[in-house]
Length: 487
Image (cartoon, rainbow, N blue to C red; front, side, top):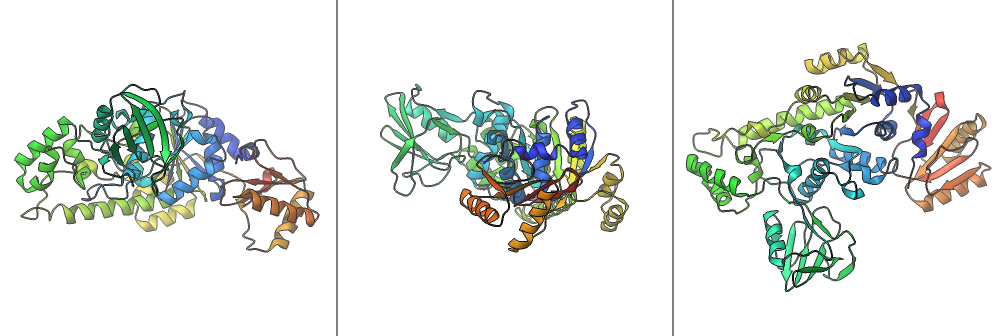
């Protein structure tokens, strides 16, 4: 399902062409505001990704998932990655799920050690992350954590593989049912990595890996061979290394009120919520910005919603810290300083990006004009007012959202006929091949020329409707370049 041809279409817009040219200048680290309908976000991000690595920031995790899905239709799927945020707050006495942690560590591994020979682990062209993931500090060096990798023909003792999985925070069980678990039966090792849809079964012959297959959780029956073998990233972002255990032991001595938590960590026992102590147990903390490739372009989608979401997150996290840890010990006093794990503000993150030489662009459905400044001033957010006022560079894409026809096929087809008569390029996008075929048949039966494409890799021609499959949720109309995309 490729819609790469749409990138060629929007490149004809002067504002898009100007933004692409500017993004292609590595020395340019200034800011830029792009005003365009929400439907154009994946197309604009995909266009910019052709010039340099891009970090696309969204307001919520759902928006990040949708944007990443749309991007996989526009650029090669292996160049797109999503960096999810924790489901828990930084100071909460709950651990994030192994699914989330595994996906995050897999991305950090690709950023730190990209493998050009393996498309699934190669350099990332577009990294999509919700603002929550951008604001939260990470334990330093997570990208250097070694995954447990086993392929057919590898020489490794079963005991060594089991020890490596245990060190990577995988839980040993009798039967593998959830991600982050492993089980051993004779010469068979079952593992469920957080990044896989199905668990994998590794069969040993002595100290040699004989075969690696997927298997079903429901009935534990083996499936087809996994050609890439086992690739299992760690399941926790704070591993109980000897250094971490020693620090936990010292913390227990200095703060007996935390002994219930730190005592187990000192013994090498993982405890729910232990990640909250990362600032005092790990070697240091850093932001996602610190591990991005040089010259990465930060593109914030709908900056005002992102800023509002970030403000709420920072306030909620601080309130939770005061309510939970301050009451966790006698005297209503916080025992240790965990501020290093707190969410940063958007203003501080932006300043940090500038210090790293990373351009910070905004992608908004409206331009930052005088009316917007008045709205921002009314909120009392001085940082937002300053950021909007100082934005000297601004480009507006001449396009608007497509109409919502709401099942009015006759009106939609009338608009399509009008566009075709004027020489427009018209593309209709559905999620499945069956609906695409039915839509094309309906167009032809109404005397509208239509052509179905499995992949729209090149710019479509005018005077005929191109029906394609993809993951675009919203359509747009661009009169300046005579392009209409309906979904």
